[in-house]
Image 1 (tube, rainbow over the protein chains, first blue to last red):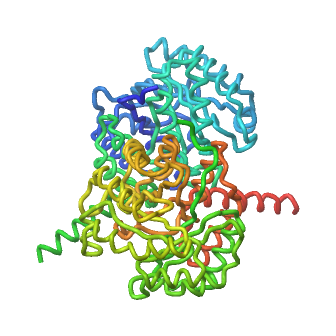
Image 2: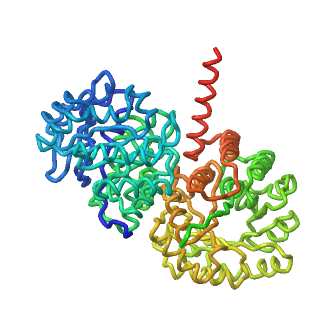
Image 3: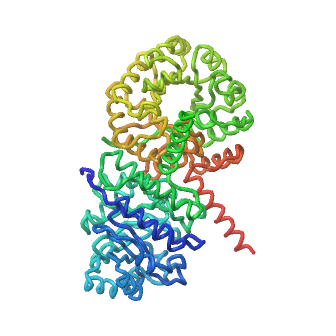
Length: 312
Length: 312
């Protein structure tokens, strides 16, 4: 297997990253964040969530954000939609892609939405049909694909089963998500190989959380079996609700540093992403979780000081 | 290439990890740290440095530490020795292995020790000869093998050249060190393949700093080309003097989590290392830099709270 030479990064910071922030992030900041990411060269930005504001108050201003961002032709702006109401709002807001979701873990599905995996996927049938009808791209996201906070191990066959169901719904792209960041490379390759027997490998993505620091090795392992789409969150935005104080999504800067270092192409300007990571971390008052972000910002600051010193 | 099934971890926290701490760490704490690591199952612990206290005041009590630790048969206690004075002190202290060092970067060598790489290695001839004479194991560590803070790129041929010189001195094991953590997987494999043409692959090690978050992917990449020895530092102890505020050595806990998750054997008890990481972080008053350490300690604390709650 040759490693894919072009890798698509789906930036999920504005949605998955911000959704768990307790203090409300102003729409102005969200719009600036999406615009900076657009300028940095991302071709896909998960920008908002049209879920009930009762569930996720942080995402209540999704329509405003979608209306105010400056779109670049060629960039897809994706929106999470739990039901027909969300789907209709997403389409009205001009979403290029809607995201539906399910878990690979029965325990997780029962505990969180009080129904089986099969039932939870079936509930998305109207949304999927409407998306096809409207010509909107449909993405399916499978949480707990590498492990579950309630049941622990998740069988590979369970992930494959959800992939099949999402394929039958007409998903254009499917995310294999390690929601709690417990996966390691060998298992990741096993899962990716199994699901790519059921769904086109160039439309499967890896969504890795860095809770146990494994995200980059899992991305490397996935690349080695041909996966070419990865999710990442600028500045590592996003915590893990199942592990207080733990890190969440893998930081986009760290992923880009690895991929570019390996000579792979993403079309994204790493330095611009580092500056965006600095902007959003300061705007929401939380530490920057990207190691590359921290290292480069420190290096630039030191170089600027040294430059200033030689001017004296 | 099959991935090695047994991986040796050299724990460098007590030496490489602590040496840059500004506040003096009491010998009691250092002894407790080494003892806990011994109990956790490490077969090699870099325990002290016999360098001039003027250079590295934190390591001035090396003889006391070596005298007070409880040794386990089968575990090697290594000591850094810059010269004959250090070597003699190390042997007197009962070091099982002495570590000599050089850079793969001319700029680094000139800037730090004011001599060429070749001269710096030649200066270790008496130490190497004395180690052979005394039957003490000799390890050579090559800094800046993946990049240099002064000259940037470091040619693979320069790393190979230092490996050859260290082989000629009689080194039993050689460390390929990414001192500033800038390496990425493809380059790491290129370097490891090149040096393994000059030195037995089962006595080459990878020493990766996590400054840019790349350490685990670089370890995975190294495993894939047959490297089976890695350095790591409990709780990620150790900063990087060239990048203020940046992380240093890869955290042992994170490495063990990946290796054990891949079904590889190390003989080390991960949970014991997590507890040791908590101990040393609290003892020296700095945040735990291990993602696995933070995640597991949080998980255990949450489970304990939940347990307590159900007792009410």
